Length: 365
Ligand code: SF4
Image (cartoon, rainbow, N blue to C red; front, side, top):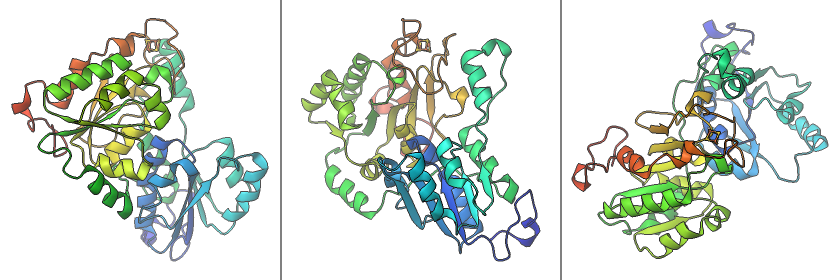
């Protein structure tokens, strides 16, 4: 419960006894939904008697539905996202006494429109981010990380979320992961590799992934690939390589199961993607590969011990979210990011005997 001395801090008045029904809105995407969790956890800590609802698209519900702080997940089905649907759904928010909009989109603004409850909203820093992409000659200043932006949304209530995100996989997924992995990895170090991401310019070339596969296997690692099934199909050479290797597997299971297996890996190699945030939120040390985006835009993995590999090419970042092709044609940001650098970042560069010597979240490679 927030103390009475906090009750008048900022512009939101906390009712006697605290808020009773709180809705947090973050409809997409996977990474942002995960980064919204520290705000949820801070609200649950401050108002333990409150019913806490989380509104998100149904494809991301799996990562929040087992969170003990969340009373109810309101899933937005794919066919219920039109304006008239949202206006009708907004009636469900009428009983709330606090709405926290961490999305700030047209859809969430419609949901929160004309509600009696105060609405706390995260600033987007859209102009600052656009300057980093399109007008670096104006010398833009550092941007707050997404976690800080979301925490700032709570400021009018006198609260601040300071912890790193953590995701709960749920008991069924944990049991499944235990059985599925079984003794498969044996004495080998289990490494998660996440080669999928929606936009092409955030994607490391397939031949780099296959080279990384060979390098890590030579060093005795067991490799667990995670992606959507469509992403697996889009990488036929890598999929064939995994298929032929008894010490490699490909997981295209739902997010809760991916969360469960990620926690059992010593490290994860990812793009700037939702799985990067999921791995970090499961306590797995991440090596993140940034292409057309950049950590300066505020989306580096949260927590200690992670490594970001970004070449800082003069043209980087060239987009906020990703493109379908490199506007320069050379794609140096990803093409020149060598697999050896990833092996080194994972802690394998000094040979198998060096395993465990890296810094970061235990167990490290
Ligand atoms: S090489 Fe430069 S221009 Fe091309 S995708 Fe990467 S950051 Fe963008």
